[in-house]
Image 1 (cartoon, rainbow, N blue to C red):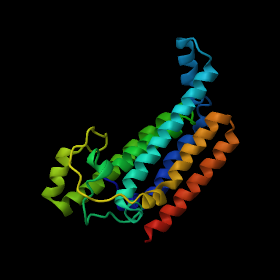
Image 2 (cartoon, rainbow, N blue to C red):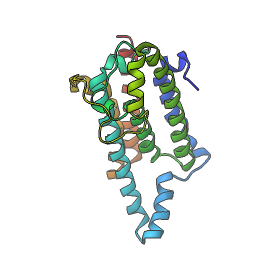
Image 3 (cartoon, rainbow, N blue to C red):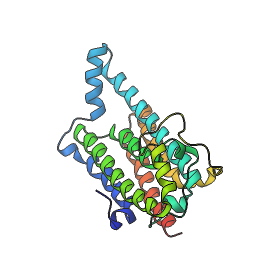
Length: 233
């Protein structure tokens, strides 16, 4: 169940595949997931389906904003060189910011990304991207946590027992350790993620698929480029 060395080193590529293949599944299912949901909700609520769909796309954009914020918040404490490192970093344990609520905030945010971007996919694509992202995130988590446990020992086991693995707890489960957030570093790592939120937000406002795909393509290009460059540092 643990991710292999290749999967961890090339996780940016795998994430791209996880988004790319489900997005192409309109050939199997031509019905957009959000439109299908809007048709059902519109009939139940007695509302215009197009209005419901637009509101759902706005909700998807809000979910992506939340995902971008969580990733930025987490990266502000973890630093870009660690987030995109080709090898697992186990020298220190971060227990500040979002890491007081959940052990893997970056992967939790990735699932939110799949949920938000899945709104633009077919029904089959939506289900596929959520399942694939969740499974891959758990594989990465199992790999990273086994290495952290081996490196940090009892200290990490105590942290594991207090803080949930993937689904955040509120309020914080551990006291702040005193590390300061570097927000500039956080945005340096995650500005591509905000691009996804912008792309769906633009679509919710304009319903222009060309603008959506253009903004998404730029975000993906920036993600692969930045992750490749930062992994070398």
